[in-house]
Image (cartoon, rainbow, N blue to C red; front, top):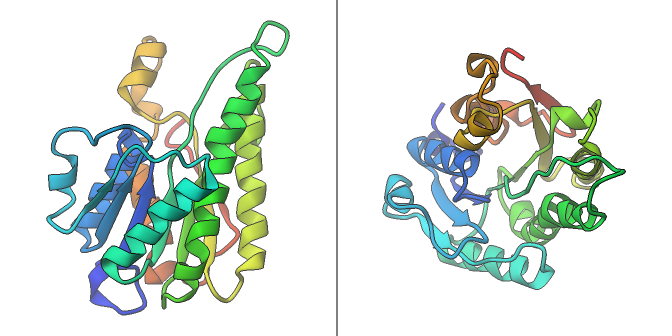
Length: 238
């Protein structure tokens, strides 16, 4: 089912972290299914061709610091004003760092909490009034399979993504019957950065951005209207 074929399916979709590999894959997939897409990112400008690939109605909101609640609200309100509402929020914005606790920088814990938890919370808070007014309000967050059982060096990252998991569950209860809230939990995503960092790995076993985007698009579709509070592993063939 295409997003634009039913009034109960999301038609206006905001994607945070939209300039990144996963965010751009999600945004383009939503646009291909007929959605009007809002591209929100902290970077000063979108990668070449991204806005065009998302259609002539795509709205680019660059240079947005989503760790600031006021900036998040301004961006979301601008998106809703442009299109007359908001149907779905996909929180891709976030960050990763590997470090052991003994030798790591304590500031990384605060940075990853801000990038992964606060951005999702601030944007969701700003979007809630608009999503409640929609006939198909949806929020999808990006958790991590590595936060279910963390490995060495994954403490700060896993703790922040575990926060995303608990935020997802709590918000699903808070908005039950009004807005669905779910999270996908990927393993290693097949990106150029991950390939460079792990050159000897079996890339074919990783989940691709397009595969992950397909699950996210399902969660904002009418077919997933009964799914909320779910933490869905999307681990590829790892």
